[in-house]
Image (cartoon, rainbow, N blue to C red):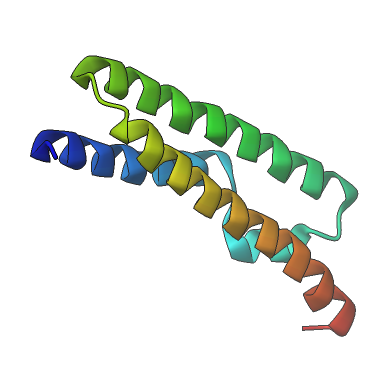
Length: 100
């Protein structure tokens, strides 16, 4: 396995996570404001933008180095990040209804 491809893929994964955090609020903020009707839609819009950012970056890097590994790393990061945000949305309804 090409060490440069692994290193660049790791950078793509980290930058993808940063991209999601640029477009989406913190878990605390989601849980605090999830009771508002527009919050879920806004979070899901941010997830879509983050996904396009992540996969777009990975596509460019993959084309530059001639290796698909950055796309795999970005896909894994995107699955993780979307999972975290969806968990925050679903757990916020529990926290709000129980008064936590």
